[in-house]
Length: 238
Image (cartoon, rainbow, N blue to C red; front, side, top):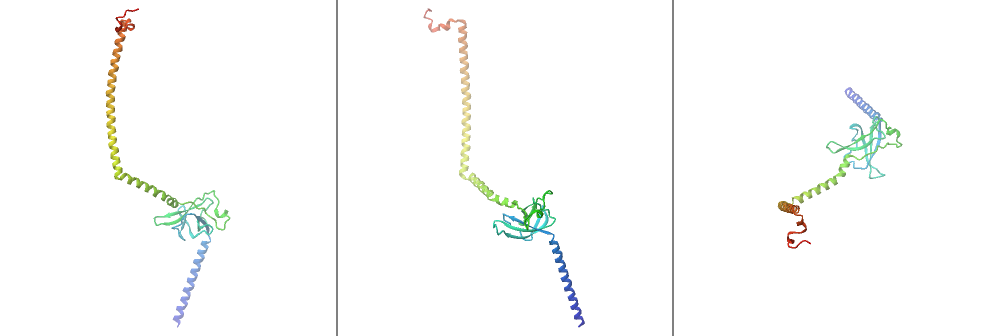
C-alpha cells in the first residue's frame, strides 16, 4: 500500500514538473515573439515554392520567417504575404523584397535588400498597422517572362537549319558554286582579251606616232608641202 502511494507521489511530481517546463518554454517563446515585428509584402508574381514558415533573409542572413500566404481579397492579382522579422532587422523605407530560389530544390525564400543608414525605419514612419515592404520583380519572373521569346528564337533557328539542310538548298548551293566558277572563268577571259586589245591599241598608237613624226619632219624640210600636198603637184601655184 505504501509502495502505491510512493509511485503516485512520484507520478504527480513528474507531471507537475513537465507542466512547469512547458509553461516556461511557452513564456520564452512568447517573450521572444514579442521582439518580432510583423510586415506585409504584396507580390504580383507567382509565389510557387514559397511556404509558410519559410525563411526570410536580409542579404543572405536569416532574419525571420513567413507567417502566412493568402490572396489579397481587394485585388486577386496580388498575393499577400505576412512575415515576422526580428526587431533589429534593418527594414528601412528603401528596403525592397523579392523572391529567390534556394539551391536547386525549387524552394523559394524572400530576400530583403536596401536599408541605407540614412533611411528611416519603416515601422516608425508607416501609418499602417502592419507596415508594407514594397516588392520588386524577381530574377525568377524575369527568366520566366523571357522564356517564350527564347523558345520562339530557338524555333526559328531550328527552321533555318532545316532549310539549310534540305536537298533543295544543297542543290542551290551547288548550282551557286558552279555559276561562281563559270563567272570566274568568264572574268579571266575578259581580262585576257583586254590585255590583248590593250596590246593592239598600244601598237596602233605607236604606229600613229611614227606617222605623225614622219609628217612633222616632212613639213620641216619642205613647208610648201603643207600647202601643196603631193597629189596636187601637177597643178601650178597661183
